[in-house]
Every structure is written in C-alpha cells, then in structure tokens.
Image (cartoon, rainbow, N blue to C red; front, side, top):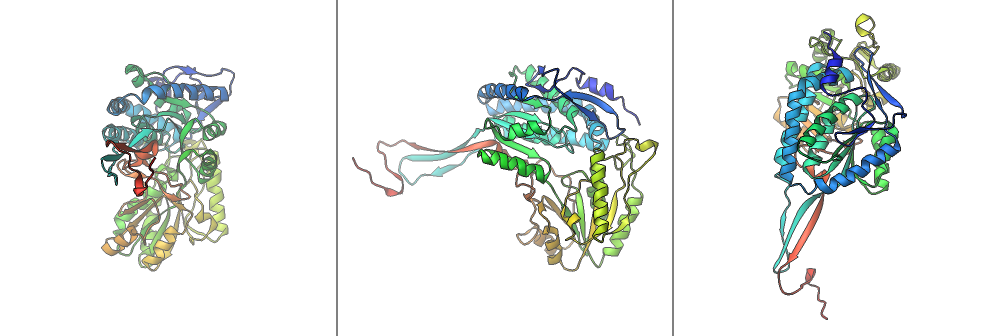
Length: 513
C-alpha cells in the first residue's frame, strides 16, 4: 500500500513555508534559523522540514501567552469547554488524515495511528464534561458565623514536552484539560515528529479563530533540547508536563524544582505481566504479544517482561514462539502487517546493543532478533521482535529498552512473582493473568503491584481516558488524563468568610485591645 503523503500534508495545511513557532493562526520565525528534517522510518524519506525556534522566538511566544492568559482565564469554564468540544469535532473530521500522518511520520501501524487520534477525541469529550465539574469542597469552621471552602484557579502557562511515540495524543491529554481549567499552553513536540504537531496546531488554531479567541492561548514551538531547557528554567511557565525517558525527566525535574515550579513527569516503564498457573493461556497470549510488539515495543506501557509460573512456563513459551513466527513485519500503512519500524537508526542501534548485553549476561534467546533487509525495509529501521529467557537482576533487564525485546522469567509462588514484578526501578504499568480471585486481589492490594497502573486479565498497554495515567518510582509520579488529574493544572485556594460582627481567632486564642 502506498499513500500520497503530499496530499495528506496539504489536507492538514502543512506548507513548505511553515516556520518555527505559532502563537495561533499566524506562523513566524527567523528564515535564517536552522531546520529540523522529519524522516519517515517507514521508507527513510524526508517528509518535510520545520524551522527551529530561536531563543528570541521562544521569548516572543511566552510574552504572547502571558497576554492571552489574561483573556482566557476570564472566559467561563463551560464556554472554554465548548471550544474544546469544537476541537474534538474538528479532530473527528480529520481523524483518518491525521492518523495516517502519525503512522507515516512515527512508524506505528495505521490502526494505532487512528487510535491515537481517537484518544484525542476522547479526551476532548472528557474535558467538555469536566468544564462543569471543577469542584471544590465546603468545610465547617470551628468559629461561629464563619464559612470555609476551597476553590481552584488556573496556573497560567502550561509547558508541554512530548515524546515521539505518541506524537499527538499525550499533547492533547494535557492541552484539553489545561484549557478547560483556564490555562494557556506552549507545546514543544519531539524533534523526531514535528509535522504531526504542526498539523494539530493548524486544526486547533482554526477552531480558535472561528471563536474569535486571540492568538497565544495554544502555542507550538518546534525545537531541540535547548528549547526544552528554556521552558524548564523559565519561571514564567507555571507547570512543565514532560513525557520521555527517566534521564530526561530527572533533568527537567531538577531544573523546575530549582525554581520551585510545578512539574508533571511521565517517564520510563519496565512493565511486566504475571502469567499465573490459573491463567487462561490463550487470552494471555493476545495481551502479551500485543503488549510486547505493538508500536514496535515503543510504548512506555509496552510489555518488557513476562513472569511465568513454572507449571505453565514451557507451554506458554511454546505458544509465544509460535505466535512470533506468524508476525508480519513491514509498512505500517499496510493493515495486513502487525509490526512497523523503530523510529530511527539510533533506536535500531540501541536494540542491537541490548541484545548483545543480554547475551553477555547469559540470556538465552528463544526467538532471535536482528535487522531486516531487502526492498521492503529500505529505511533500515525494521527489526525482528525477539524473546529471551533471563533473570530479573540482569542489568539489561533492569533497563528500559524502547524496542520489541521480551524477557521471560520463571517463578514458583505469587509472592515471588510480585517481588520480581516490583524489582525494577520503574513503576508504570503491570498486569496479572489469572482466574483465581485471591491472586487477583493480592496483586491489586498494598502487598501487590507498586505501579501506577495494575490490571487483571488485560495487558500492560491500552490505558483508557477515564482513568488517571502515570506511574511511581522512576516513572516520575505524574498523573494525566482522567479521574482527578485535572487538579495538576490548577492551584488550590482555601477561603474563609466571616459574616459575624466580631473577629474570633482560631484555636480559641484571645487578643484583646
């Protein structure tokens, strides 16, 4: 299958003159600044290029955002929600087109590209309802004729740093909530996937223009690491929401913390599924294989480890090997294929290095890895999903490799399995496959998984919008998307009103003049 990518770009309003940043509907930038070229891992071709923002560009965007915040926060929350609703409707119209660009620029399967845009639509729907539910509590005062309550106010500028693997969905998780909460946004997308970001900016800018919203409410900055550092160190940016590696998150967290700012970190995962002796093995196979090879293993929730009970280990390992032999690897725009490419050749090098380190530590490969060659794999980014028998304390197993490498570990007791599951630095997603109620409940209890996400009889990937998404330990502790994640984008204020004709002090303190 071959798609006319230029036609896709045209439909999404991406032209050669697009520059480094946008404060809404008007694009700007220094024509002399350097460019970022977007390569497709599907075929290795350059799709287009985007100008890199300078520090002057960045400062201009921040100042425009500050002006826009003074306007946007005065709009009633339900009205803000209605504009987000219109953005969701615009995404519905552009779902196939934007989803195809996501697939081509990032390399995930076409169905996953469509699914990512559907996540954007879903979070807009969620945010619309949320715009009428930004609730605070009412408390009883210890002083007579006093009323206490709390309310929530917008923070100001929310900086969003997103990763290549979900080039549009994670931005929308933050943006939809931040906007209904009354904030303005500045988005720095991954330099590996700038065009999908430019497309999203065009779509939302058109919605704002139709509603007479001034420029600066929702902003895009295409840039490299330097732009991210500017955002992290800028006291004018109230919240930094950063998605990426643990290494990157530590740097962002330190910079934001040094200025006592707020950060929301969504970092690495090293996710495991426990396969119990009481599991439905056929159902478990689907969750394990999709979790391991979906998006070519480049999800933060990808399944990295399978912790399998010794009684079913051989049988389940045999099922896995048989399933891997049947995987179709190739052009992700062809819906007959299961697995697309890694994002770039650096990712391929990391994949190969991890395989060698695993072998050096004593890993035994049941399904060998390697780079695919031939006319269908000209980008050099297509690799073989592989399976290795390992020990949990291998250094490479403790490390998150963003590639389709699946590690198998054997266990005897559930307590041992849970200890293995928790025995890594990361704490994002986890799952157990079991039909035993006691095992399921223990896994979900305080004695069980230490991850932010814990599932029973589903895999580690595929989080829904309604729940808060995020993890513990080196995953950063942030929460995005559903539940009460909206509170991260607001500041809490406690209010006390005295409607009496005296001024009693708290705790019964007397102060007579």
